[in-house]
Length: 108
Image (cartoon, rainbow, N blue to C red):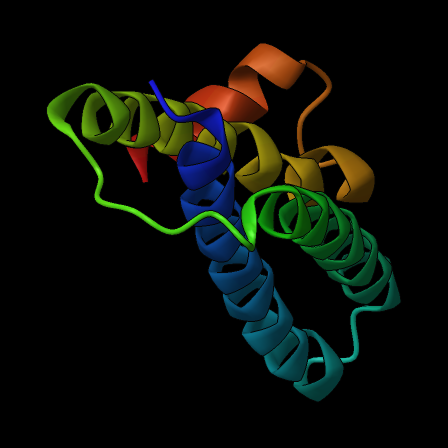
């Protein structure tokens, strides 16, 4: 199993997630919600930093992705997107329990 390819693909997915979090900033600015703006900025920055670390770890790896790597990427991406997607809820205080925020992110 090639961990560097997995890290590169997960890093790209996390950077895309950070970009989608950043698009929500427009709405928070439009509706003048400073708590939500701060929550999305912080969550997007953490997600982007984590994604860049993963991407740079596997950036030079060239090769094909096999079935094992594909299964690991799908499983970890589902988990990581739910984990990092729950951060704005927690930073804004919308949920008091991380399990509730994670559930809301995954179910959405």
